[in-house]
Image (cartoon, helix red, strand yellow):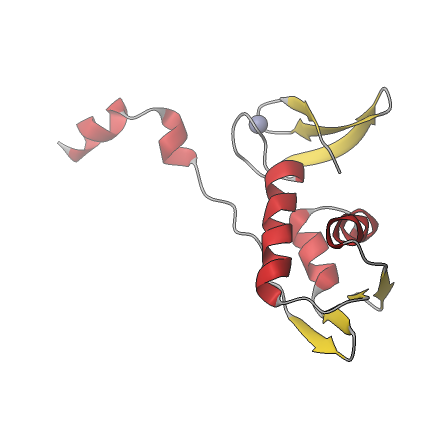
Length: 128
Ligand SMILES: [Zn+2]
């Protein structure tokens, strides 16, 4: 009975796994915010740390620097706020728009940053 019900479901719902956005480990020091596990986050998202650093800098409108695997933001930010930005980054620059999988990479095609899905082959321009 259960098997029968399952076979009626579209394949997508069976294979779909929500991609888990890495948690942010940050603290405020003086007027700066430091993301301690920045390198690990970039690795988990399979994105270059420079690209991710640039994104945070632009979104939060502050200068940033990378210091030994940590990201230093010139401003005070709560972890909740940083998490929202990271989630937005994942939604636009990691997850495939078509199949919702995270098996993607970013390449420049004709001068446009494009999210290429290795699972379904979809290509979508990314705004970063
Ligand atoms: Zn896809």
